[in-house]
Amino acid sequence: MAGDQPINLRNITAPVVVFASWGDNITPPPQALNWIIDTWGDERAIAAAGRTIVYVLHDSVGHLGIFVGAEVARKEHDQLVTSLDIIESLPPGLYEMKLKAKAGLDHLRWEELEPGDYTVHYEHRTLADIAALNPEGREEEAMFSTLSKVSEFNAHFYKTWIRPWVRLTATRQAGDAMGKLNTLRLQRQLFSDNFPLAGLIREQARLARSKRVHVADDHPLRQLEKKTATQISDYLNKYRDQRDADMVQWTRLVFGPKGLGAFIKPDTPDAEVALARAQAELASQRSSALEHTTEGGFAEAVCRIVLAGMVSIGAFERRSLRLARLLAELPTGSVKGGSAHTDWIKLLKEQARMTALAPVEALNALEQLLPDQTSRETALAVSAAVMMIEPTLANPRSEIIEFLMATLGADPDRVMAQARRLTDALDAPKKRPA
Image 1 (cartoon, rainbow, N blue to C red):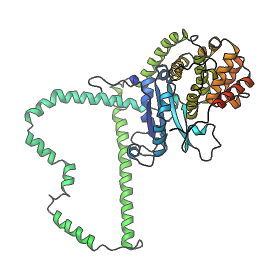
Image 2 (image 1 turned 90 degrees about the vertical axis):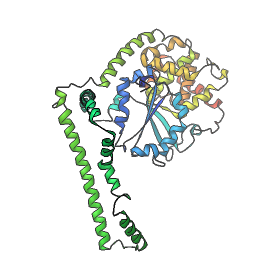
Image 3 (image 1 turned 90 degrees about the horizontal axis):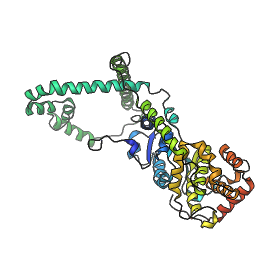
């Protein structure tokens, strides 16, 4: 809540980073990420709205370790912090941040742009990818809607009919007495100085510490101690597991479709509401986007080619985004059609929204944005240099790049040579903070 108004997560314009772990049994990855499905309904709506969401999945760190662990998730925390500049530059959309240790890898091109022991890339993700993290599905969430309605009814009933009578009969003294007699409070008082035998226990503890002797691991009493401790631990674990299982079964029985859920119908799932809203918004925004697909020139074309290529490859490399910055700093004459005053980050985000709404039409319009052969080959060369794929242009790994090369009538050898000239024009990048 912000004051009296609920916070709308769709209004957050800054990039959102979510750290989740499979070792977290309090907020496991599906629970940590389902809000994206419930809020947006369609990954295209995220890009169309100009929002960026990045999530990271750890294999083992626990709930508290995510917040206070000093070592367990250090590499993820370090790479997140050192990549904030890249995350802010990412085109709008949904990504999973992946880390890979450099040790054992072949030599990475432009490795000096990514100091440290890890290379990072941002893989494109869909809401279906997030849903797949929970193979059991979300059908049981409906009963929590029923549970919420029952809870709201009980609260309203209490405030209306019970609380007035409680206020008439309750006194401050009675409230204090109930607080002091609370079982949790009594548990602690039992072992406090208020306990009559506390002095004797304290003295016995002092004597035990002063006469403590080492006991061998094979001593019968030591073995009995270990066996007893293991049995107690196993019993408590079994009790916890059984208690949790019983609570799940009881909740299903009482609030599920065969219980109160049959009479108190759950609300429409948030994911369905979000999907319907997203489809309506995308249809409306697509009509507007189609009117602007032919607007722009060289810079817009380069952005569209890079976006299409990265989507086809499946990820944005951290090195690519930093390499793009260096290419943008080259003298204007190095890239015919470029401009020293072009705000590439802003333009990339604008074109990302365009390609999210009308991907086919945006690419088909490239021939109009690039009216001559020279500008087309230059745009492809710049894009290839950014994506670090110029060595493969003769046999592209990306179907989209192959399609664009053919559609624009570009000569792969000339594009490859021009891309290499661009990268050769860069001074050896100085190691800068990652």
